[in-house]
Length: 88
Image 1 (tube, rainbow, N blue to C red):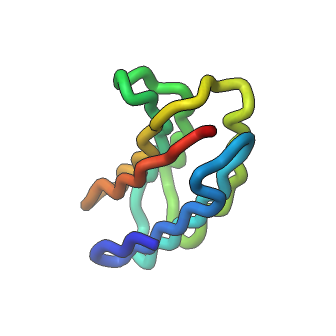
Image 2: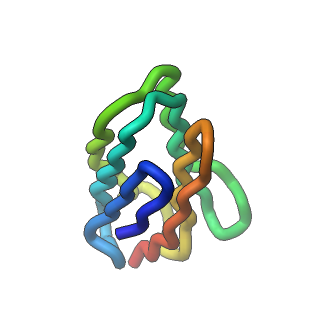
Image 3: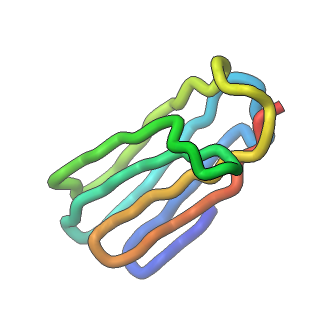
């Protein structure tokens, strides 16, 4: 779990074979962008939420992506939270 100013991020099933569960909590209203990027910086998933306040809970299917290291990045109005993901 990673925590920030008013935020909490939990990512489950690391390392993973086929899916990740991302749980993000935010106590202040903001915009939210979720990105999953390969180690080379290629964005493989983007989820934009223009008016976010509360909880984000999503299962991401990564089965079609090759094994390797990925970076999960959550960008809100006031901070960026990142987490390293290993796909087997």
